[in-house]
Length: 336
Image (cartoon, rainbow, N blue to C red; front, top):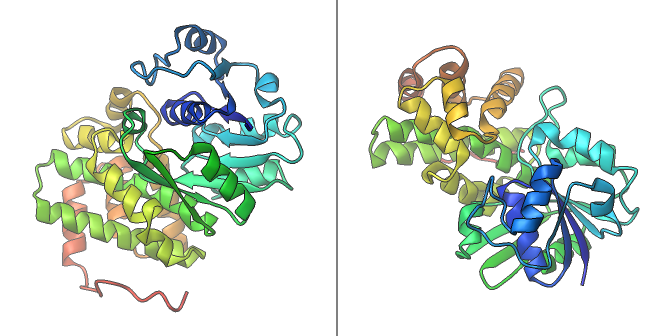
């Protein structure tokens, strides 16, 4: 039996903590708000995010960060990326020196262009670090639907430990050594989930959606390879798998944002409608700026940026892509 802390009481953090506890491990789910933590501990339901999902008796819920981290052998970070650095800084003096650290956040820090695990690495050096990413809608995990994810790390022992902690007869965990590529894929796909929601709301057909999905994958891999990721990573669960789910499921928060915008809502109204963090909005701003700096061709992301922040029509951006030079379908990556 391992001792585990899951930091962040959102839907994915709650589902992950419950799965680990159901596997017989000692787990504390940390929530920032004491009232929410107390209510969840007593009712055995996270009413704000997963009200119909019963929590196993062995799962502890606490707002006491010190108590949550006591003797924790593995610490999972499941907070939005904008809150990650401050939390990692608070964890640093409390974490056991040998604790493995696992990021489940998806996003990019604006000023530094650092991914979540890189932020954790800065604040907690000398720890083994892994990331988890994949097509993992929390609501479907709670229904025990067949699901798979990727754990990526340069530490084979930590990958094996995470696999043992969360694997079950309905949740499969595959390992990967390309931590950067897996994590970058998890951030980038949120951009294209917003576009997919817009495309669906506009009533575009299956041909159009297929173009959007495959060119989204091309943009993601083009951008990632330029930054040093392995292009093969994007053919796996954290790439095409996660992209497919977030671009096709109404359960995806970023898809919901896009659908609301496609239906005529403003960005501010769409965010209010969804009511939860949608990382893709800020990621679009950050990635389009980086692509311009590096000279990377990303017409779909640029079209979304114009729609979100400059009042342009997304249809106009898509038409611009269609009238541009017709490049190769599958781009060579050997030169990376």
